[in-house]
Length: 436
Image (cartoon, rainbow, N blue to C red; front, side, top):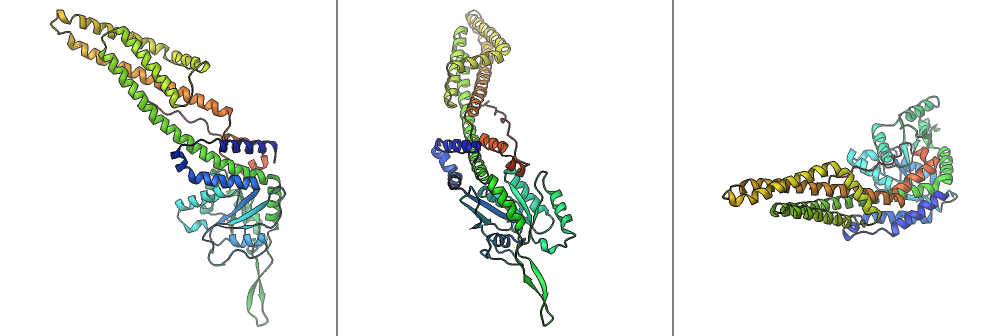
């Protein structure tokens, strides 16, 4: 394996060893973690899996038998026999791999569309390479399954089985038609005949068909070349993809949990600040209490996002808050001073107006409270956004499975050619609103 592949494997193993999960996360991800650990074991023992995928009756089991060289899978020329995934070892040695398993799968047209998509996703999850087997021009069902496989970044080779059933002058046109309907960049289908038959006339005059030796040499040559050059990279690719899915689920769940907790935290501080401002008659105490409340909110948000606030980080946050709040903050401070002064004047004038000036003081206090709520929410929102960006910078310093996955794909042009619809690196998702 290449140097970049060794680095990706070592960093992936380190990521898995350091994965710190809460009991709830452990329960939610237990199934995916078991599959990942099995895939890591196969990566360590160099055992690759190839899924043979397609509609009912296209000859998937026959193709496995032809590749293995013996009848290990039941076949039926009229109906599909495979109901569950079955795996057999491919007897051909491949340099760099300990073993290669061929996995026969149920037909994709035996179930409705949603179940078909789930079957394709499950096959893609468990296989390092998929052979999409056809017996004629590609159908809408097969194209839909191919889209599901490619959406998961799965390398796919298309195989036209039963090529012996087509006249030699029509076969090139059929292959061109299939290739033209495949997603851009995928290689042309390989023509094979897993269980060819030839009509023969018996002495009594009756015509019977007799099975002929399988002709799967084009597929065997292609697999030999592909696996020798990229076999271990395919194993690592599938392992990284599984780990990246777990990482995405984990980060999404934690982001949602922190978002809910941050909303509650901001709401509590906003209510506390509004109550203090409305109840306190002294303007200077309002301003001092509001600043202390915002400072405590920032500190608790940092604790929530597991990021210490100190040193350069604190200065960056203060610069960002002051820069984005300069104009609005000045207006808010002016309004707060004006409202506070007005309320004090109304309260001082109460003894001379027989208490009549107390009535206008109440709406002023409500306006101060509303302004306090707005400033607290804005401070909390800006702080949470900054903290999420800081976490993003931390992830870039220590790449996770998704970053390693893209790095491997870029480094191995042979794999990238098989995956022309490889998902592009996702831009950072928009930060959620943290307003309660």
